[in-house]
Every structure is written in C-alpha cells, then in structure tokens.
Image 1 (cartoon, chains in turn red, purple, orange, blue):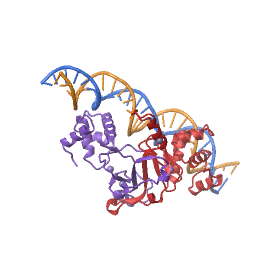
Image 2: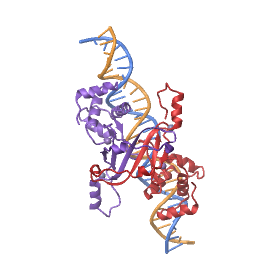
Image 3: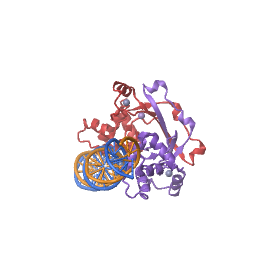
Image 4: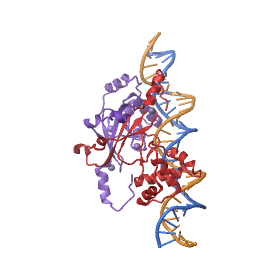
Length: 153
Length: 153
DNA sequence: CTTTATCTAGGAATCATTCCTACATAACAT
DNA sequence: ATGTTATGTAGGAATGATTCCTAGATAAAG
Ligand SMILES: [Mn+2]
Ligand SMILES: [Mn+2]
Ligand SMILES: [Zn+2]
Ligand SMILES: [Zn+2]
C-alpha cells in the first residue's frame, strides 16, 4: 500500500536516516509493491520522476535501508539481488521458470527451529523458507509447447 | 566419505555423463567433504593434482553435475556460488559472520508445505530452509573485541 | 543563515561467471 | 587395437551486477 509522507518521515527519523528526495522515492516505490524488484527495476521506476537519479544511489540507498531493517534483500540462486519492502515475518514461493517471487504468510513457518543437538553452538537469529516450483503461467506455457527442452529465462 | 572408483563410474554412467579425469577429480573432491566449497575452492584443490585444470572446466563440470542432479548449488545471499555434493534432503545453518554453511538433517523440515490457498496455482517441486546466525567461533570473536563495529567477513 | 556531516552522480574498477573456439579425448563401432 | 565422432577442455576474452572513488550538493541542526 501507499504510505503517507508523515509515516515516511517518521520511519526515517526513527532510524536516524536523512530523508532525501531520492531515498523517499526509492523507499516509497519499494514499500508500495508486493513484487520483489531488482535495483535496476527500482532505478528505472524512480528515474521517471527523477531523471538525474543514479543507479549507484539506488544501490547505496538500498544498502542503508537494509542495514536499518526497513528493507530486506531476498535472493534466489546466485541471481541478481532482489529487494523486499515487507520486513514482517514471511516466506517465499519462487517460480523457477519466470523467477517471480510471491509472499507466503504462514505462522507455522515462522516457528521452525533447529534441534539443540544440530545447532552446534550457533546462535540463531532467524530463518527463511523458500518453496520452488512453477507458477500457473509457466505451467501453461510448458503445456503449450511440450516437445521443447530449452526452458527460456 | 571417499567414494570408490566403481561407484564413481556407476554414477556417471547412470546419468549418461562422460567420465573424464577432470570430472572425476572435481566430483570426488566435492562428494568427499561436508563443507560447501566455491568453484574456486574446488579449482585450487583439484589443481594440485592436475595443474592444467582450467577454472572454466570446474564451472562447466559443476553445471553439468547440477543438471544431472549429482550436485546442488547452495547460495547464501548474492554471494559467490557454493556447491554441495550431498543431494539427499537436508537444510542449512549459515553463519552470517564467517559464512560457513553447516548441514541440518531434520525430517520435520522436509515435510513443510504451502497451504492450498496460498499456493496460487504453483506446482511445488521442493523447498529449502536456511537458518541464519553466528557460529560458536564468531560469537567468541565478537566477545573478544566488543567495541568494534566493523564485522570483518 | 551557516556549518558540516552525509548524500548523490557519474565514471571507473572489480570480479564471479559466461562465452568463444581450436585442440584433445572418452565412448562406441569396426 | 584403431578409427570415428560427439563431447569436453584450456585459456583467453567478454559480460554485467555490484562496488569503489571523488568532487560537488544538500539535509539537518544550531
Ligand atoms: Mn516478500
Ligand atoms: Mn549441505
Ligand atoms: Zn513462472
Ligand atoms: Zn562464523
């Protein structure tokens, strides 16, 4: 959902972050979608309103927001980095065909733990669960062209 | 554990893969450790016996072995790719300090599922669980030097 | 309004991974 | 054992996401 200017201001102040036009634009863009865009996706979106915007600024801002905990990085494979403006506890469903990432909100998945025996002295801070599969669209595409073997991107 | 030449031959034949010196060396090296080495780690290991070995061959071989299902890629963050010679169902414990990856074998974690409502038409093929935290060594290191803020890799 | 610590833009650098290709060779057939 | 051929290998070049560097801009505080 879209977030108010006051709320934006409050969140940045709470983390002692300077609120610049660029940061407001980047964070608003990310917080208002439920997809999981790449730095370049955000760059292209935000550049429409701020043509001077540098891709570097997008990366820097995202790293700052990640460290502050306002944003998280969600990576699939060793692919390009994807970002998530939703930092409440949730997990992901990943399409191995088109690489879209969909949220899974399930309290049961938030309660997982490692047995003491296997923890080997680790102090666990959190965990993430990824389900991999084919989305409805990719399944349909595979049926349309059954004898192909080269799965395109 | 170390694996016999016969077993190696059998596994490659089963997947219709040519067995070359390089492949035997790379796969043996990976299958005999329970760490999760990078392509370059394997390159350096294998190069000791085969100094002609190319890093490119390591990458190519790993991609072939992954496609065949003899090996899996296990990535943490958008870091360098790590490989796992253990393809039986298991999950991972990841140290965010030193980035070591430790196996977690827990039948409960293998049974996770997404509720039909949230699956949104996905056909799920599998899932992976990552626990993040600090290993015993990194916890000790942090206590030794409490006022530092720059966490060195 | 002034000060100053921090941020931004843009260009250059990094480096893991992939691409290209001539030569080598494992697997199979004779 | 030898020849044939599809496939693998080595090494060098290319790619591309991310990071590094730095001079000028600006948010925040007094
Ligand atoms: Mn999400
Ligand atoms: Mn493992
Ligand atoms: Zn898809
Ligand atoms: Zn550690």
